[in-house]
Length: 282
Length: 103
Image (cartoon, chains in turn cyan, purple):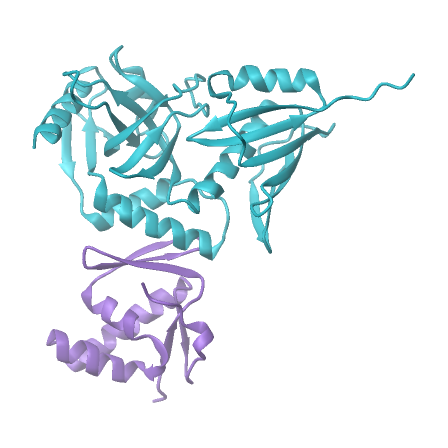
């Protein structure tokens, strides 16, 4: 008697965008469920990806290539090849069993989806500060900068009541009040996924280490330039870049962007709390 | 000396923010912030108006700059942006397809 492998699906929802992952490899799908445990969802997926494992060497150190042909997007790296049609919402992924391959596909996919919705993925740590008073809303903060600027350090120094959304890749979408940050399972050095929750953004800080803690204003053009430098986008696509530049300009007009020079100890979070208190009661 | 014509490349994204023009090349992600004078030249880069006329009508008159100095500065500015693929430069008028929509 011939046995037919049955295909199963799990849905991973990040930032309110649900992606269905379908595979007939039950053990791989189980590893996916474990990896994205805090982000599994019963929502109807807006994208459905058929995953097929291929026995290629897991080479992942080459650059990712993302291109659009007609309505179809093609994503390539040594350890995966994927294609996705936004019109049908369906796509296929051929990948090695390396979980980082699927992680990369999801990051790229979300960056493409977000670009059309006025959002973006940002090289930044993000966290939610619980308010001092119960009647005040929780607010989220972004900490961005080049590698080594202090994103992971900021998350390591965070007080215990701060909710970590990501130590590496932050998820930003427009909301009625401006912009909001969402937790992501995409982790960096901490190798720890963020919490699956969201809050309106209070500020974006560009990090620089220094001898003391200091928060300074930035010009709109400098803020937009630095924001664009840290937004994740993979395609050399004019339409996409145009959408992202429009979003970046809108973002810096709605969300305070500051330069945060900090000495790496816990007192930097007191500076954030002070900033928050002033902003809340301004 | 032949006229120079300039047009905005189709590979760029541009937005006005707080009175400054942000320009980004989608091919290599180079980013420029244009000052007022450069923005005036950028906005007039329609591929049909000679650079010399753009400078005299949009720069010298509006910003009260010495004409000779303005022409030299404009030539340098155009050369810089052309080197980064932001502007197209020709000694004859350029077609409409080369000019991007300004927002």
